[in-house]
Length: 159
Image (cartoon, helix red, strand yellow):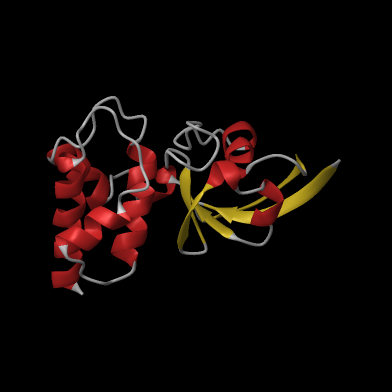
């Protein structure tokens, strides 16, 4: 059984028919070719599939595609400016060496974007807790933490 899902993905209005059992990960990857949304554990534990839905980060692997109807979804592809420039967050990940194999990076970026968009300044302990829902086997987390801390501090000063 299929159902039509109308939503906004990375600022663009979309409409597609999806199997009612399909995950949002499957819809984003298969229907829209948004390959930053990774299939990792497929049980909501690793964070590789994180996307922002109406301003809140979710594991798209355990979020049904039909639940996205009427919602606004942002993937890592949506962080890039209209002119093709990387966001400050993406650039900070590069500058701080927070990208190694890159598999977990899109999920971390989406969680970090939610943190930045909150407008709050977090302690190091709070920030580490907020980033704890991800598995990364390459970076040891410190470079990721530094990149996110760098951008949150800059955003808080600018705000």
